[in-house]
Image 1: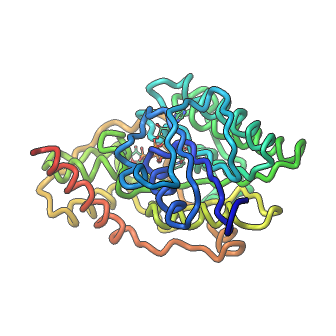
Image 2: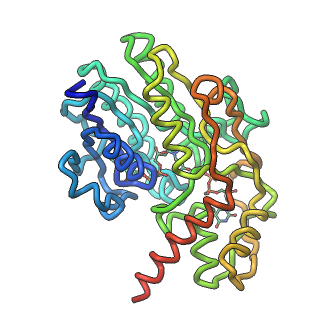
Length: 320
Ligand code: NAD
Ligand code: UDP
């Protein structure tokens, strides 16, 4: 660690939705940030003012290749997160999770650096336990179209735990549940961005299946608080830790709320449910409450309003 508690922190996937917010937060806390991204789903523009900051560095690099840098902490976020993007090149998705984890763990081992893995609620697959607790092993189809992501992330967790057991590496594993907010990609196909963009363009709102499947939506600021909190807890609390908002909504409810908050005239249309689409998902966050005294503060309505304002601005600028 360097002068006055300032750390050099590597954020892989730092030009993406969550990663760019994380880079901003770490810079605001006074750290030096090295953002590594291959811009597969991320965009330099997400990094806004960070790019001008003297403590910020941006490196185009694919984490499936080894990386030799000097840092104190690593947040490993590199991986496409939306089903459309991670299914576009599934082999690359698995490589990103697995080879990416091996490379970043190797780097952390050489540097004796603490490393946090952005894991996912997808490790629970289509869960048979509700709400999902960390000790649940999940219900994942290993050969389905979501497997490149789900199994890739599960294997990454395995690697993290083996580096911990075998090399005593300081690891942290965060299982992120559906997170939303400004800077989601407008075309990435995730439900919150799809519905908002469709509503703002007065296009039909595409609900897949009957819309009775549930998700719980966490605003990005809440997600960052638990992520950075976990990274900085004592060495012996390594997770896995669920991070999400435990308030559960059906996709129909989300569609209705989006129409209400945008004041849109869009109508709901029903489309086929994608294969292996989980029917219910909701985190049990008792562990995060106990260890980090954390619970999300931003209700869906308030978070959606901020996200709608972002997309409204983005779409009006695109229209110029
Ligand atoms: P995102 O797609 O916006 O960001 C991912 C970033 O990783 C992008 O900038 C992309 O260009 C980069 N990337 C992809 N492959 C790479 C590679 N091989 N080398 C270097 N960079 C690469 O997604 P996000 O929503 O910001 O998700 C960030 C992380 O959080 C991901 O690991 C994702 O699996 C995890 N996560 C997100 C959610 C969510 O709801 N947003 C839920 C669960 C887990
Ligand atoms: N979904 C939908 N309409 C859309 C996009 C997604 O009904 O335009 C549904 C999708 O089938 C899933 C839920 O919304 O049941 C959440 O999808 P998302 O891709 O955001 O994330 P997931 O939790 O499935 O990874």
